[in-house]
Amino acid sequence: MLQLVVLISGTGSNLRALLEASEDAEFPARVVAIGADRECEGLALGEEFGIPAFTVPFTAYESRDAWGEALVEQVRRWNPGLVVLSGLMRLVPPGVVDAFSPYLINTHPAYLPEFPGAHGVRDALAAGVTETGASLIVVDNSVDGGPIIAQERVPVLPGDTETSLHDRIKPVERRLLIQTVLDIANSHLDLKELSA
Image 1 (tube, one colour):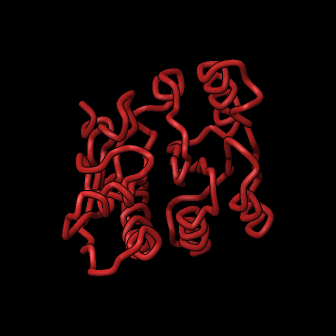
Image 2 (cartoon, one colour; image 1 turned 135 degrees about the vertical axis):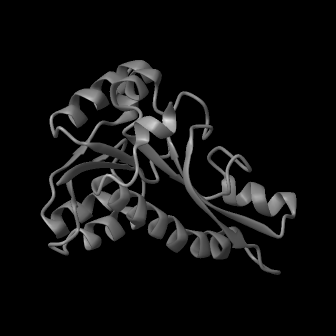
């Protein structure tokens, strides 16, 4: 059974999809803990699904590296086989990457390498493109530049707003994430090989 720790900053919609998938006894992975960098709505999913949740507040540390060390310490307690950044709106410092990579993955609401960074949906709209997408990557020390695990195109429709476009990207992100977790758990995907 593949053990997952999922790190969030917001509502945890991808996390909910993973939790629902893992309620199926046949699903070969389980979320063992939920972590966040601040108090957020998604932490309530821990209570709803009976999963331990923890917060490592970024603002409680004097530096990003110190925060990263505390985060590594918390995540390691759960002995995860995979750490999923799912809407964690903060770049993790090198110490976190060194501790968990390549078993550290991230969802991103754009077709990378197009539109990296925190505003992938807004940037796609501003660029006037006719399609964007969703990507799943191995986290490295770049900004959304790690090895691509899976991605899919999503059309930009006339009149799309940041919200309407993001609402169409999210289900694609969820599907890619669940399929990737399945593939890793079933040994159909080797992240070490992908990252070599």
